Amino acid sequence: MSEAAQVEACVELAHKLANVASEITLPYFRTNLTIEDKSDESPVTRADRETEAALRRLINATFPNHGIIGEEYGAENEDAEFVWVLDPIDGTVSFINGVPLFTTVVGVLKGGVPWLGLVDQPVLKDRWAGGAGLVTTLNGAPAKVRPCDSLDRASVYITAPDFFTAEELISVDRLTKAVKLRRFGGADCYHYGMVASGWTDVACEKLSVYEFGAMVPIIESAGGVMTDWSGAALTGTAERQVLASGDRRVHDAAVSVLTQELA
Figure 1 (cartoon, one colour):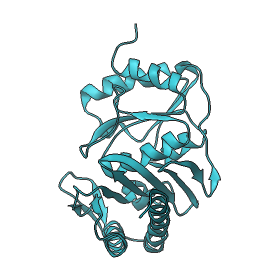
Figure 2 (cartoon, rainbow, N blue to C red; figure 1 turned 30 degrees about the horizontal axis):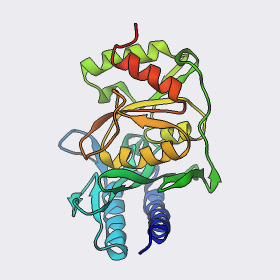
Figure 3 (cartoon, one colour; figure 1 turned 90 degrees about the horizontal axis):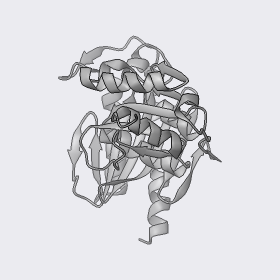
Figure 4 (cartoon, one colour; figure 1 turned 120 degrees about the vertical axis):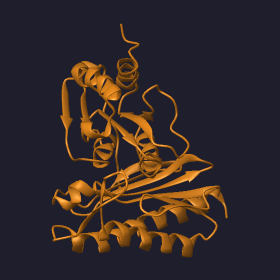
């Protein structure tokens, strides 16, 4: 398969996966779901598991030689050149509380590097897709980050302080005090789409590969930058501290604040 054909086939499947996910998740949204706690005490529902199982079946049927890493069912064939990363309901806390900011996250790693990403919010009908040499789009229209020349003019979104260690919270506190506007909220991966569309400037989190593997291509193809807190590229499959910015100037300043390099 040519490179162009591979890109087209993967993009087509990513959209198909998002469509399938919405067909499963939406009937469960704002219903009386049974909620279980996983070993890390994070919540999970029948909707999470049913969705990921369906997405895995479709990937295996379409690309049997590709690998998969998902939040609910782990990894299979993860040494393949192309590995799909799946978070069927990113923001389960939002989902179970009726907040329409949860997303389905679909990404592809190529050679272990984030290559293609899609994030879909089925209630608001917002879908970002980008990477693989393509321009990021929101619902089919080009999405672009906005310029911001200094950190003290920037806005930052962070899902919740609960995800950070006490030491990490010190760094996060420095960042939130350095920006103009800061919000802790249940946006989960939705606010990476906000950065990609130029609605906000910075997102700062800790994410797993099935989240950042999709977010990196979306942010970068919209003209932004996404790294770890030290400014290093996001690769591998371990959970990482992540920073996404629409403007390189703000990103570099945020890295300095997070790493205490700013005088």
